[in-house]
Length: 162
Image (tube, rainbow, N blue to C red; front, side, top):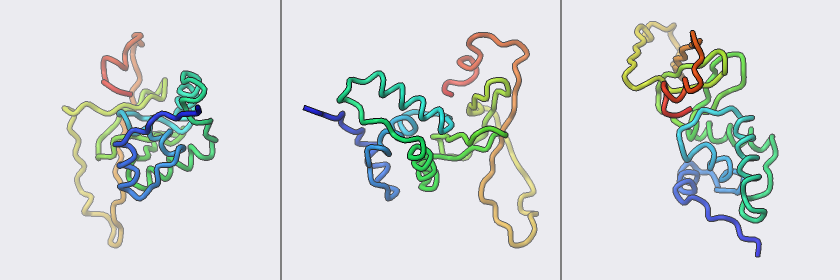
């Protein structure tokens, strides 16, 4: 019997709440992106999907999803407000599972993106002085950091999730 695992009902409801049908491809991408806080590029999502595929029994996980489908699904999720696109530098877009407005720090050596701790406060003033006819679409604050020394577990000491 070729039995698939039951989808996460909360994820199914979340997809439906924004008008997206819970296809197997969307559910697989959602399993990576919407079940825990994360900051991942499309390629990192693909790598995690492959790891899940390899770690599952043959019939327990759906067949592989194409690269184009992963990119398209992430873009759909971002347009639907399920993910936030971060443009943190010259590299790929990073997708953030936390869609609230919050600031990030990026390790310039590794490219890893993290949320700034809640006790870091930031304020931007003067946005009401923009030229007439312009409306703010998004604000992204990214702090670029470089470790003076690189201890093995730097990321785990600074941020609870990557």
